[in-house]
Length: 218
Image 1 (cartoon, rainbow, N blue to C red):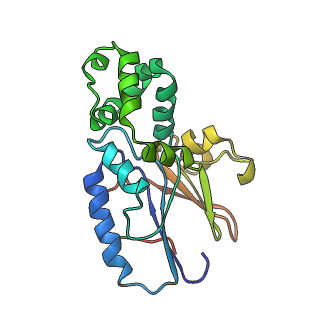
Image 2 (spheres, rainbow, N blue to C red):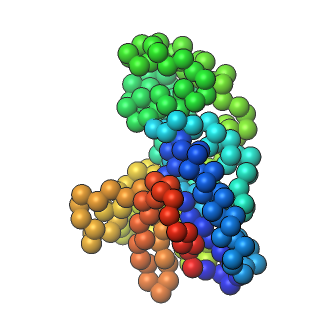
């Protein structure tokens, strides 16, 4: 990590703005105990779905309401939302992944969709409910980032492929257990940080935004 740089890294939030707000408070307190020249928080995607307040999570991040500058990466669930905006039938799948909770947080009537009907009507309503700032935020999400000798992405990387040639689909969806054969095949990790030097090493992160002692990347 570059000298004087402090990095916080947060994985899957999944609509839990209550926990994100508490995490922001914890980061703010922690910053006062550390000496640094520059601090940044890397968010590793999956801001929406499952939890009750995806809209507020996106609003918080899109508006930069956070104690440090942020670097927000895409997760596969953000791709679900963007796909649904173009294809109403995608809701048949997205609703099984927590998409109905996201739609509800934006004020959309999800009654018909709960029983598998009215997907196009739901899509049309949702399209009018998503603020431009939120659309711009989602459109600007990158799939990976490098800070110093650390590589960040949502899911994992494909072995044998250089980092600059990784496929978007793998960075958003591949299981870390595939990336790191030492992990059991049943492992289910949410996000990945890779130390590039002295040799690549995999550091799986499955925060699910559990409040616990802050451990910035050192």
